[in-house]
Image (cartoon, rainbow, N blue to C red; front, side):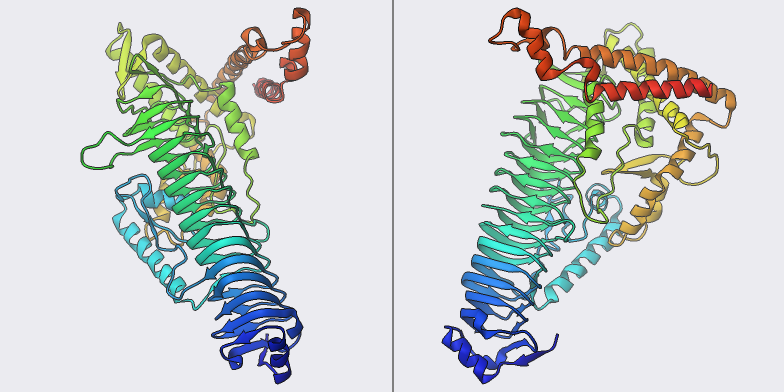
Length: 614
């Protein structure tokens, strides 16, 4: 848009409206559409550009470019160093300044997982769960990380070289205290924040970002669609797409990714992969990695067992749940879909036994392998995550594979069967077995082998009845796999992607994500030798039998939620004869349970398909 100098008549009109400038010759206005009568009590200094139809009142504005249709009303101290996009609205602000040389959070080191900084990574506004995972946990890739960190630092330098910060088109900044060195994206809403310093609020019209009342944030980056509200405090943090940080939650040196929910508690040096939830009071997570995790009320992941500093860490793989008042003393490592209850100070390492239940018995960590496989709670979690993907951006950043059973988990289950079988063979008469600083009862070990084998039967059966192809070609998928904070992919493909640096790897990760079914076909054919028709029939026979077993088990487990002690507290003011009616009105019947009924029906349908194929 062409700009011009103010005419003398316009200057006179502005002065008459209480406006002033250090030098009116440094104030430029839109060639068409500027109306001096829409400005009142505004003081200008430095270089100023004003678009058409701007509405400015009661503000001090220094070195700013103000776009068309912008409304600024009530800046008590100063608005300085910003380019303000079309239609933005800034009202009732204490001070809002942007200084040349700032990086808006880019390049800031975040001491994730290791409090002493051994895994520190630089923030940048293109960070994803996948690139962050590699930067935090693959420290053995020294040259790749060196080049990546150099690229990020160079990118931060380009941000520092920008003459101004920006407020995006249609953004709203209202009722805020102090905003310093913060870039604000299109359609973002920043209302009532107390302090924002050195950060970037990425936002898009289809995925607007929100910062709310009482928020204090320093050295941060918010991804599109993130919400940080209700007095939350964050420092040196990345908050991912559709993440919610609210109700006074405190996060320091944390990387929080897509669809996470964090309220009331505290997190320090936490890497939270997608769908991590911590929304109870007194929850404390320190020096740990979480993925699709759920933190119970009063849960505590502690890092106090040290003499040389806070150097220990804990890892909870996909789907781990921590019960109320659970306590874990780092270091510790939990396998996927584990359930943790009680106190554990002896550093359990159960990563080789996914789907297990870890409980405390007289100070000893007792492990029940595989017991969480095909349980209503576990299956409900796996079902709800896709429904809780609240991202609205056209192209989500974090790549998430929601399959309950995937090749990475199946390989772990295969290894777990061998592990438990070996323990049994070594001591066939033992009552308890020791593994990973935990005790396993003989009965639990045998049941674990059975449950793991059921999972293997269902995985390959599902693949066959759902139309999976037989692919014995060479290529990625036949070797080991990895779960890269939500992205499940062959390790071979990962190695091809990361040989250079991670700064521009997102497109390659996205391509790998899109080729999942192709890779899966090679994997299943390789592990189960599906080229043999007789073996396919054997797999289908076991699949039908296992589905019947699992359906019966699920029905029996769910029945506990509808009978017996589950009816306690119902019919409180009614005769005993009406207790059942009260329960039915509130809970309904097991046959119409909104989660269980469709699940059992789907299993029966798959069993019918398998019988037809036989």
